[in-house]
Amino acid sequence: MPNRKKSSKSPARPAAGRRRGPRILYAVTVCVLCIAAIVLCLVAAGHLVGVELISESQPSSSSSATPAPAAPVTTTAAVPSERGTEIPATITVPDNITPETEMPLVVMCHGFTGNRDGDGHFQPLADTLAKSGIASIRIDFPGNGDSTEEFTAYTLDNMYDDIESAISYMRGSYTIGKIGLVGHSMGGRVVSLHLSDAISAAALWSPANGNGLDGLEFISDTAEGREQMRADAAETGEYAISGWNVTISSDFIEQMDRSHPADSIRDYTGALLVAFAGGDLDLLSQTTIDDTLQAANDRELDFVDLSDQFADATHNYTAQSEDEAETAEISALLENSTAEFLIDALLPDQAA
Image (cartoon, rainbow, N blue to C red; front, top):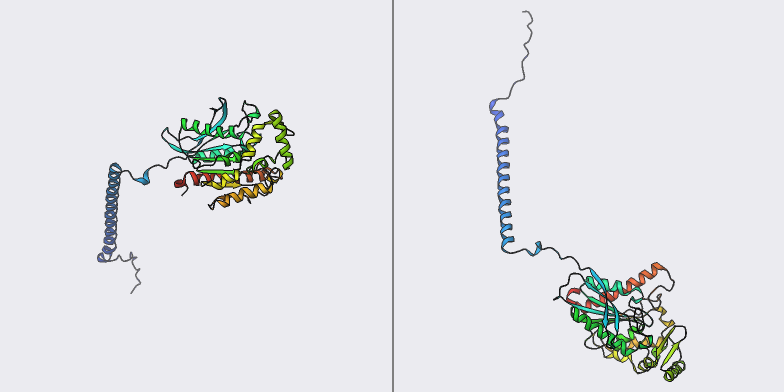
């Protein structure tokens, strides 16, 4: 038989029964996914409606915007004094206060022949306090800074009165709560003598707290020299201090003699911070430093002791090395530690 060509055939197709299974499975899967999507949409819509109803009936605490932190606002003022003069002052307050907002107040007191700049420390401290809701006022004592009075008006009594005048002025302008004081050097002595139940917190930076006339040891470092200064002032009513270019009054010397800062500290029950620097020994005696710290310890109350934190600092809390970076670190430590102390004492709820 002759050979025949085999006819070419297409590959065999699967039987109809075998093709239907995958198509049905695919269709079922699509349907399930569609139904699931519809259900999810309905659930989401219902959730959104519920949220909207809740937001309309009762605001959610989590949806309320976080209030912006306060920013410091600084202005100058002329505060009327008990003597009928004007006390140059700088005021820093939070920018978010209203007339009804009660806030603590801190009065900052500079040292002998200083000014309300506080050797550059008072403004940064004031700014930090204002951001936490604490107002501050810093003043030029008589004969210092922008004061128009003679330096002979620089007495402990007048400085005491000026602190009270500053507090009264702020109470007449704002709603003031607790009171805090910060004092450096002679300002620290004035603050020490001003301590009472009306003062909730006090920070003493290298206070010139020698007992009686010993508080003038930065002018004369011997008891004999201080007694001679006192006698000379009694004759004319004043005494010109060599090297300082100022003239103090006999009243100032006599008030120094009658004042005992350590006794005031010992009796004080409010919050207390004490700082001393390594360079203090250029102006203060070790006895003054020891007596001040002993008085703070005698209270048998906790206090912030920064006496070992500034070994390389001058009396004005700059670097003894005059290195700018080191000075910045010293300043930041003093200012931030003091701010934290004042916030804890004057705003305990916020600090917690």
